[in-house]
Image 1 (cartoon, rainbow, N blue to C red):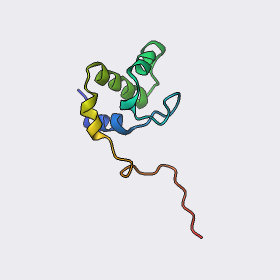
Image 2 (cartoon, helix red, strand yellow):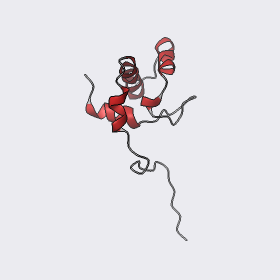
Image 3 (cartoon, rainbow, N blue to C red):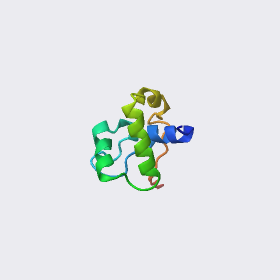
Image 4 (tube, rainbow, N blue to C red):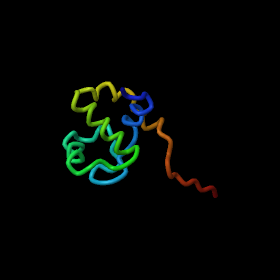
Length: 85
């Protein structure tokens, strides 16, 4: 069973490396995720989320995840620097 917080992460967490860097996990092509089945998923939470994403896609459930995506206005800046003059 999927944890609610994991589903939210799958909807919003962006791939941190590779060809699809900065792409939300749920928007990764199924073929890309299948490539990791042969090569090995990353270790840790990222690999777990990618495996869950693949299961969601294989079962055609991605439309249940899209409503969980934050709009760009809701996303918190990650490395914004503010300067005051």
